[in-house]
Amino acid sequence: MLTRREMLELIGGAALGAMCLGPATLAASGQKCRPAISGTLWWLDATSIGWDDSAWRDELDQQRRLGFDLLWLCNVPGSLDAPGDPVGRILDLCAKRKVRVILDTGSSGKWYDPFDPKAEIDYCAKGIRRIGERFAGHPAFRYWYIPHEIYIAWDDFALKIDVLYPGLVERCKKAAALPVAISPFFMLDAEKMFGGGFRYGKPEEYEQYWARLIKHSGLDIVMPQDSGEHFSFCTNDRRRPFLAAMRNACKVSGATFWANVECAEVECPSPDEYIKRYGRVHMSTVPGLPWRPVPIERLRSKLELAAEYADDIVTWGYREFCRPDAGPTAKKWYEDCLAYRKTIT
Image (cartoon, rainbow, N blue to C red; front, side, top):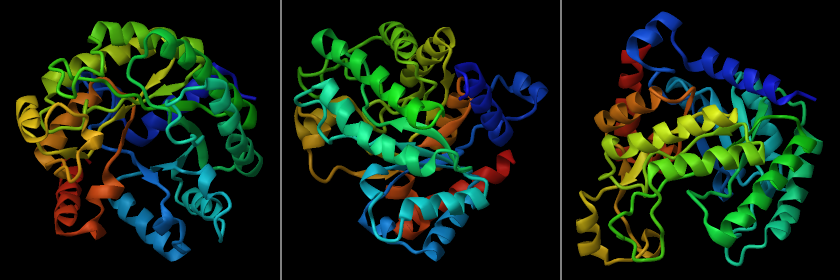
């Protein structure tokens, strides 16, 4: 079994080998890795579960053209019994392409309402155990992912998170001794845009909370989402303090920091405009929000910011909004991203 130090060395070697420039160039640029995405989250839905090898080869080829060498799979426990063994076939195809794969632990859905951490651990442990039995030692399977996302937890909820995360990490390491990742978010809703149900946490509070929780839980990789509430009004000036806070938290707790630079967002110019359009309600209750691929110049600035702090960069939103087969807007984004990649290669 790998030690925590050996696993972190493995993480760093993979990230640096895949993404990072030479030390002199990095020092001159002030960046820790190249401002480029190394892979995407992929939710295994009914459509992609049913793809044959040819369809998956085409998809992986499209991702490879963007420079992706990592695939972050979710809904894995729910796909293990699907006809044709889709998870096994995807892993085999990724191994042939030297694509690193993250596999998720699954969740019970609305695990937070009501929140019983021991019941949630028991629920996830079944899928974790099955994944370990089937894929521990597979050359493409490189990381676990815990999909139970939070920003900061307080009071009784925080006590329950203190049970949930270490419990899931322990079961992952027992099933397959690989690094365990999580992708938290941060809240920018100081304006109470969503009403009064969400407490705002300042960057320094965010840093203190995560430094303790990472160490307490034994997490190896933390890859925070970079878009706050996923809106286009989230600027680099607003996200920078939270990225810096998480970088510091990872440093003091012995974890590796990756960034989740999301490539999709909701078009909205300001919190005031959101309130004017939809009222003070959470975005999850609003139908038909105007999601879009992040415009390429805006994406470039997000990547350049993340590269100042992160050892590797992943993304959410590609499958849903940016694949070239997802329509004209997505195809244009894909072509723009290909052109951008050439400027940094």
